[in-house]
Length: 262
Image (cartoon, rainbow, N blue to C red; front, top):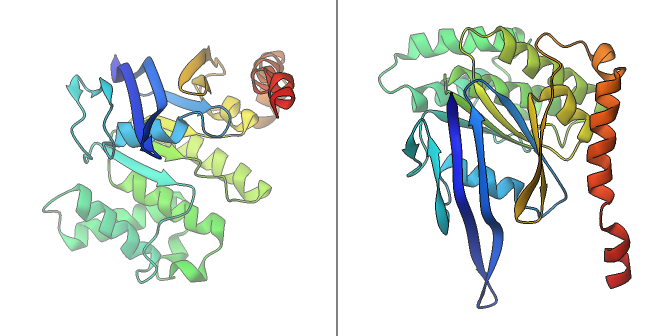
């Protein structure tokens, strides 16, 4: 069942008096419960897609549809996790999550919101850090709080814009495993849209990968590793190597001609 649709979507912005297109005639569907990664070179329009799905920007042409309805602005059915943790520095980890819950669920009592916040702090392994402020937490821990806040909001759709991009390699791997485990074991099957520059990360996490070149989608790849993935098995498989080589070749496509142009 289709959860998100983009129908002939173009997006332009004004630069030095002229209009420049970030996206042109983009079409795709994301099914309910899918984990979809968008990958491609910088400036190809990945983050623009997130802003359109979030409802912060609107297409110059075409439409973005969620659950059969055109997107008219931000909604509680969607939550966003950014690369930079976007936690409120004056609130503790727990209160950051409580704030997100109250924004998403009007009328919920503070006591209930605090119970939910504690539950999700436990799920991300930070049950003992709820009283800490962001500056007292490492980057990886701050991002776990941001993920807990997103999940606790109970949104159907998680939009994740390079959420692990500023994290060191070890913590990035831990967060990859965490988000997979949480998405697979939650009672509610969420639809995840995940932006990354990391080819191996995309293959490990995704059910489908959209490779983008400037302004459009060039390739739609189904990743068929199923649920409860084991890193060693995935990375050691022939299928992983095949997808990786295909995606890496896309990044190198046209580099020689660009070098000549420079």
